Amino acid sequence: MEKMAEKNSRLSALLLKASERNLDSVLVSSPSALRALTGVDCGEAVLEVSRNSRGSSVSIYTDFRYVSTLHRTLPDIKVRNVRNISQIKPHGKMVGCEMSVPYGIVLKWQKNSPASEFVDFSAELQQLQAVKTEDEISRLRAAEELTCEIWEEARRKFRPGMTELEMARIIRILMLEKGEGEAFDTIVCVGANAAECHHVPDNTPWNGRDGVLVDMGVKLNGVASDLTRNILPKRLSRLYRTVYSTVLEANLKAIEAVRPGITCKALDKVARDIIKKAGFGNAFGHSLGHGVGYEVHESPFVSKRSSQVLEKGMVFTIEPGIYLEGNLGVRIEDLVLVTDTGCEVLSRSAK
Ligand code: ZN
Ligand code: ZN
Image 1 (cartoon, rainbow, N blue to C red):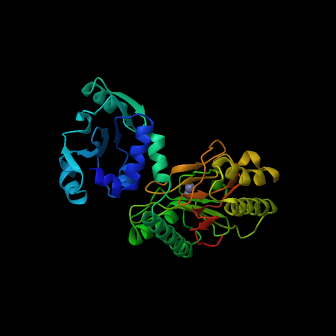
Image 2: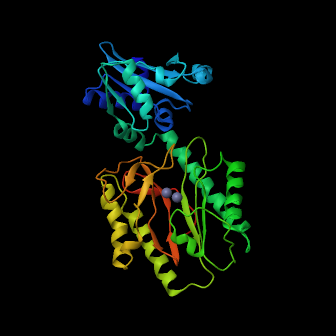
Image 3: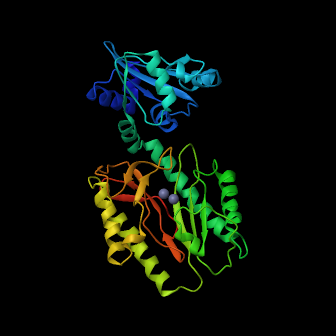
């Protein structure tokens, strides 16, 4: 098992973080962390990484449904068959686990190992996933490329009279045909509906003249992607023009500012200051962006509260927006990859 940690740099990083926190073992159960550590989709399973006098040991607990799949996909890891993950008897005194584990399961684990103390290890696990491997980067690049291609194809199919739901359905079908479906529920907003930043598509029809905001991402090779683009209204009001150019400037300036070493809050500030200066400070109520990987929302969270430092290999969105209730909304979202000196924009669609 020592060999496995050597081969797998994320696993050895996990062991290092576990020893820094004096943990005897770590239980990993979220699908994205399992995928990041093992490379495969484990189904419902719990990976146990234990530190002991011999070094470390790794095993995976699952139930009958996934046992044979895990034997095939993870031949190096000992697979332990349990009726239910609540039956696991965690090893050691200090045990790290994720906040996403249901409370009822943690209570059972505590009962099975009364001497163990359970502590939150979520932040460490999220950090391990934030810097992507070469293989993950190429998959994310391909997923975002496909999202842009689907966006171009979908917008050509949009016709006046279609409802938001019908337009969302066009995108959903293209994503199923060309990828593995949606990474999240596609957002389509006609006209003033774009002022609701996570509007749920409804029966609002598009008259062919109003603006349309679309936020979408395909799932491909297990990874997510994320893109927001706008169809401009036929007749641009002065307000829409100002809002759009402000959001675009915030998006471009933030992209220019991305580099290894900058903190999330400093980057958020670049965009936020531009929007504030234009007089729309209260109309940009969300963070500048979020990491994208096996999940559509993951570390790093590019918010005004985060001191996390951006590193080469991180992939996240830059998505400033301005939302004027009952009137209009604009968001422009790109996916970027941090490089040695700046970033590569993975979203090639025109904006
Ligand atoms: Zn999005
Ligand atoms: Zn996003």
